Image (cartoon, rainbow, N blue to C red):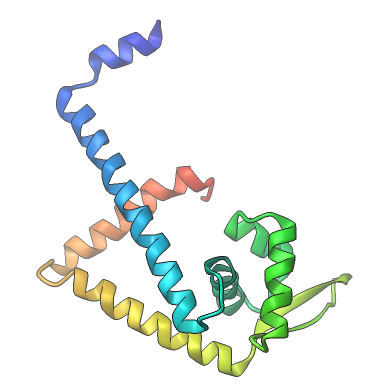
Length: 158
C-alpha cells in the first residue's frame, strides 16, 4: 500500500526525469562497452575487454591481489584467474608473492604495458574532455559530483 502512496505522490516531471535517466544510462552502458572493446583492441588486438578491465585495475592499484580485482571488476574468480594468466603469458603483467599471504600473488604491469595503458587513458581523457567543450567549469565539477553521488549507492561504495 505504501508503494501506491509513493506513486501517487511522485510528480509526472520526476517520473519522466527518472525514465530519461534510465534511458541515458542504457545508452551510456552501450557506449562504455564499445569503448572497453576499442580500448582492449588498441592495447592488443587479441585482448578481450574483460582482460582490459583487469589490466586497468592492475595498472591503477598495483601491486594488487586477485581478490581486489574481483571486488573492483565484479568478475568471478575463475575469469579473473584465466585473464591474469593470459596477461602474464603475454608479458603485460608480472607477479610476486604477497608478503602478507604467501599463497597469493600480487600483480603489477610491465613498463611496456603501463606505457600502452597510459597512452590509451590519455586519448580517453582527451575525448571525454572534448565532450565538455562549451560547458562551464562549474558545470563539469557539478556533473562529476552528481555522477559520483548517483553511483555511490548503486555500487555500495562510500
